Amino acid sequence: MIANELREKSDKELMVEKDKLIKELHDLRFKKIIGVVENPVRMRFIRKDIARINTILQEKKIAEVKAKL
Image (cartoon, rainbow, N blue to C red):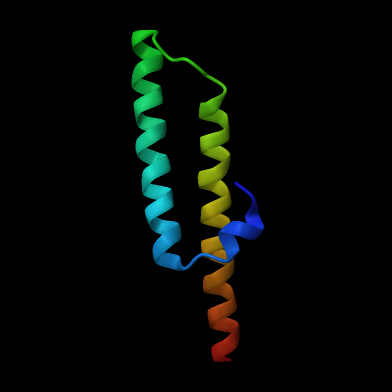
């Protein structure tokens, strides 16, 4: 995911996307334990996407606080 695309989404959309990614990461971890994971590198990309979403959510909160001042 590109950060610019994520910045255009609302907080609610970002949270839904984050929940979806967390579920996918959980499923991949489970498959890894079983030994059936097709693309183990995908786990790294999912973790980075989750971090990217968290960063953008934090940026939006900071911008909100600054706007109130």
